[in-house]
Image (cartoon, rainbow, N blue to C red):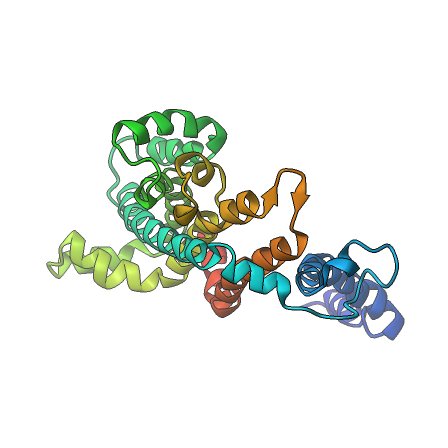
Length: 292
């Protein structure tokens, strides 16, 4: 390394030595980002525990709770089907994510490793399918659901959610499989391993971060999905969380804000927990998917 390059590197490392400069360049943008990110959750939390007289009053501090109450939470848990909505959402999201990941693994592996004619075009077509808006897809899907007699069932959601989960997961796993060296498979093939053994014993163990990343995305998309759940389900006990909270806690022009915010807050906790628990695998999966 030349003296000039060493001087430039030293100047770059010393750029944040000044406390004022560090505060302006690092801490201020970070504080703004954290505030914008967490303020909606804070607002949901204080609204969920505010009594109605504070919610509707113009007096007092709107950013704090003067007399906390559990009435909204009690109404949400015992006067609505919220526990059933939560169970429906968990069941549909987990099952749809599992089947979508399984299909995506086979599709991504075939496109990236089997080297058949038109593999790149197939991969591009799968990704373009993800870009089709659900507001367009639900119209033909509704006809299929009605003809199969699946309307107003959880199975209708489990079978329709993979239509937007599989394309995205396949695209993500294609990028991650591409980062795994071909030499590993060639050595396994020379030793007599089958394609199935290579996939199960070599590719999947190495692709765990990518699988977790794709699984988190699929689970989050399933958890927050609204259009299909609103269209294909009408019974209150079959509804998922996003649809149930919006349709059952809004009566005409009356908004039960406390219960609405409590439902939104409790509904966001499982996804936040999953992201925080698998954050290292999630980041690793995302960085691995963009190699090459």
